[in-house]
Length: 211
Figure (cartoon, rainbow, N blue to C red):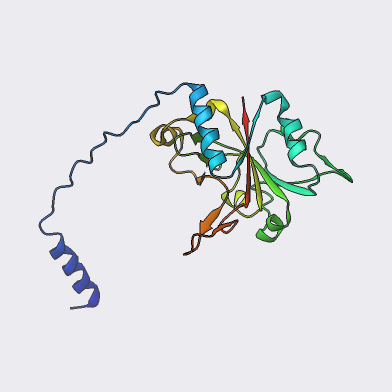
């Protein structure tokens, strides 16, 4: 008997009783009972608790808000599908800010991403109960790597895309798309509970919520 045959026989023997798969209870909440204003308030509370910087901004003022946040920065990276009107007026003290566009035809390397000051993306949805922002790789959010390598992430979220509970967010997402779930800046704690930020992603998270 070969090793393969022996392994397959053992698997067959282990599964011979063919136990019935139990029904998984799904009695958890699947829908929100909060108002839009309550969801926004809860999300802001969670994000601030996670040490993110939150800016409630009218949609018409997003370009000015970005210019304010990026004052003094030399370079940023954006996904190729980001709304270009958001980037109008970005300047530093010496002139025009250098904006690198990451696209399927022109993918930035890890070294190039590590050299920029910040990344600016949109978001797919956010869960107010957990303070989690979700990116799904859409054109205005880009590849997962562009939001993980730079030390600062500026994420622009539509208030209308905020839901209260996780099942609502899952229903909005395409399961086959690459996803990034963000709950505050990247952080971890060692055995002595000393918080260290920026280990697995951006050290600074700025969230612009369009109201």
